[in-house]
Length: 173
Image 1 (cartoon, rainbow, N blue to C red):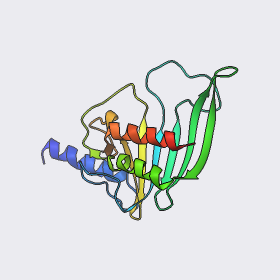
Image 2 (tube, one colour):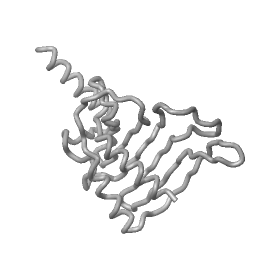
Image 3 (cartoon, rainbow, N blue to C red):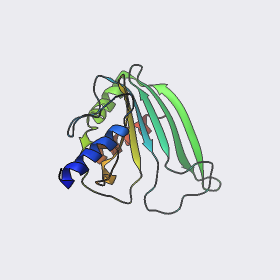
Image 4 (cartoon, one colour):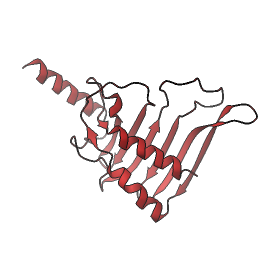
């Protein structure tokens, strides 16, 4: 067995370890948003280079959005900045059902969540993640921006992940 084959086999085992319940990620180039998807959880763990955030009860930029597809129900938890009277952070939570028109606008962004092969080791960007649940189980995906060759999770196109996060943030009101 050549070293490349061993490396590829090991990478495949690590990707499978990121999946639960027997679920397997789609092939590279394929969307994760299929008719079998029941729930999508978008996670922004913040990070990247910048000025230090103010003190507060949460870490600025950290956010979680959970979309249940059957009901089009969106839940969120977002750490925002409040400037008055002194800059601080505040945790904003909520939930609501999306209107049909809102979901129609969101759906192309979900379809753009495509699996990518690792190609780069980025820096200076918030650390994003995605959990996709089907009846076969849940798969945890990582942002392709941080797609170092030793990545142990399947990767999602970075621009598409950013677009979904932005859309969820807009819908969380």
